[in-house]
Length: 584
Image (cartoon, rainbow, N blue to C red; front, top):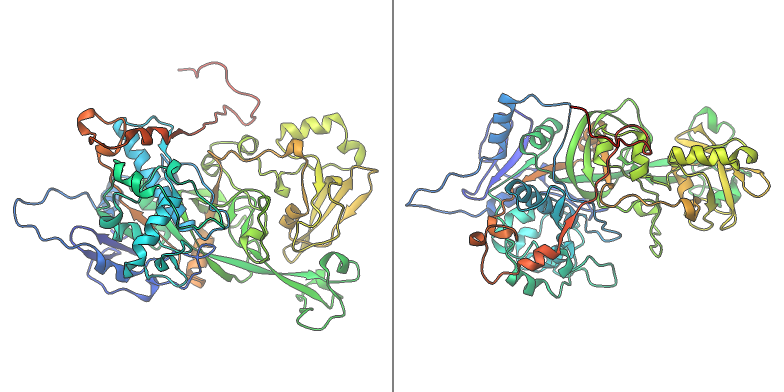
């Protein structure tokens, strides 16, 4: 039975193969290479690395039985289990943020390491149901930078720079498999040894890593790795193994045209009479009738509703580097918020911050993801287990215009009943001006000025017109046509309503099936890799005394074992929770 195209490597026999109903020795193909820039810029697998898998020759005694490969698991699983319409793997650890470093591959790899350790620990009784071991991306990057400097196996994707040894900008999750004999005892380091850093601290520094690794009982093996290129194979692998997948994802943007007229010129800082390229031709659409000058700008291919997707369906994509994430599930029932015709999505664990760029973070590239607002959700929401209101209680996404309560006039907006309704819906009512925060629109309001959102109406061309009500006096402010999420860089919730997303549960995005297929067919370099990571009993602090290794620092593992927060809802309204046990 075929599940689509996949690439498999076996650490014990040094074999690489492609499976699609068959298996054979193959040469690397051009598809397995990439030009992507690191994270915003990275993540590629190169088929030629299969040749570097360790070769062993065994005479006697006969070798022990080997763990089943992914292909074997998928074949067996397909014969006995129909694929459900949705599935999320268990034991995924909370999201952590890469900030402005091109280090997404560290978070993707460590995310898979943490999940495998948690799953096996829980199944063996060494970890509680909600406990996990928090590992250090900083330490992993430092180890890989040192190893890659001496190993040509790391000279893989275009713009991967970790092989230079002085940076972790750009790398591959698959390196963990090919370099496991070198890094199996040093790659997994508890988080407290080396917390994640931002520049100007060098990203390859982890002063305590070597000493911690020497005393650490953490070590692993990866008997098999397989890379999957199409959706049926990815979905089947998730369900068959209950393991998350490391994904390489090509990123993209789309072009928008903003009308430059005498009325909009002060806000867009444009000249309606300017010559090209300052003035670009406007689209031949009714909403642009009579407009001779348009400002052409790109917007990133994600939105604050927790999707990586084109926000202008039908418009072309502009390649914008690459990214590494963790695939944790799928749902055939999910409907895209950007394009309701797109049904079904992969659920991915991301490493991006939520909301607007954090204080002190500067981003001058208006086409980059750091120049836009961001939003995310819980796995439960993508799986259809909680209501929208329940979800906003956990992941309120307060900077997203979709989370702002609308009211008709100052009298209504300032009424106590309106505040009650907004709270009940877990939406933001009061906004204040963020003067100077937007790289796109200027001079809209004065910093700190208070507003209410009145309306957002479609204007055409992927743009919307928003009108707000001034809290002082009730005058109406209507903005020029904008992409609706540009509002997040113009207005923000007042401090009293600025609730953050729960870091233990939020941080997940949907990658619609249609987007995955569009990206793979137009840009390429998008696929998922299964790493079959195995941890011995000796790697757990709560293992039987006989299984633990003398002289190793198990206290450090205990100190970095964290309990993940949980939320419970019994219905569609967060304030209504059962006080009685469920009826039998």
